[in-house]
Length: 140
Image (cartoon, rainbow, N blue to C red; front, side, top):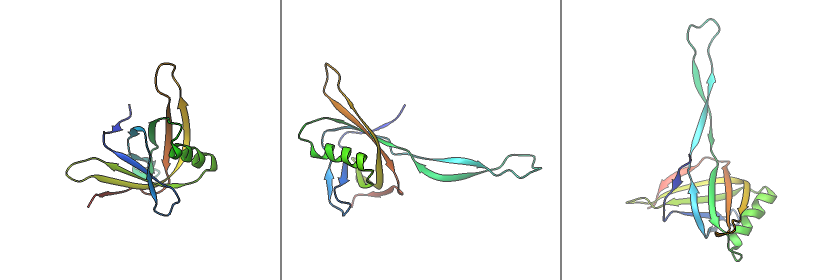
């Protein structure tokens, strides 16, 4: 089961990769921010016990869920980024106390899907694959 990030958290997309961040509207869920490392077997021949080292750090995909609104240009921009294979800068701000935490990273949009149930709001899910180090800082 994946964790989600709480209420009052926000995500921003750099519209031109020049530091001009625009808040993504209608976000209903920001998935967990996590990373993992594979273990690499470095056991020497003839050894009586296995030895391991950690492999490269790999940031896991971050899933965004949002309600679809026809006039949401940022939603259309996310789909355009996916179609063009463009890397973008993102900033997630978590509403922690006493200071908010900020996570900044570059990511590719690896997939998106529209969910259109007959009795509920139309929603969209987008997966961000970080392609850089995720830098964490506290709001000043």
